[in-house]
Length: 206
Image (cartoon, rainbow, N blue to C red; front, side):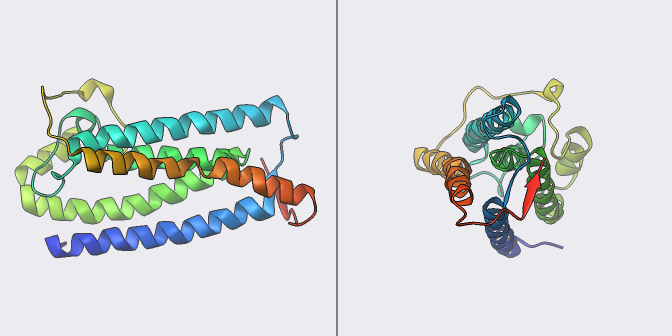
């Protein structure tokens, strides 16, 4: 059984794992290249799709914060984005990470980023749900039965007239989301270094 005291530790482990993943993904950016021809319509399309995913992620995570801020533990939030899936904040993050991978011009890398992040969040969510089941009992069990874990079901949408928001938390979430844009200039730097021969290209990814 997961206790209230253990939840922060779970989040710390999640952040450490994701930090290690970021380092690994950065190495992949540095030592691999897109199999698409430089400047090709296919390469541009993949990167623009990735940018769109990142923008949706940033806005979506900020939107979720409007509803969940300060209420994740004490209150079971089941309205707004939390009415269509149980973990929309994580769902938007998974989409954003896939978009980060797409900035390398590789659909394969986007899929790898997406799958890894989904697996990390799946473990975290299962632990969190164990705690929420103990805390909220039948109410949470009903929520689990009616609402998907990650993939939204728009037909379930329901909302409230007002929500209480802390502007500082909202701005921090938006600021954190801007980090998803880092791969755009980062890939350009690595591409230039590879072009000059400073970095080797070990693999070309489709």
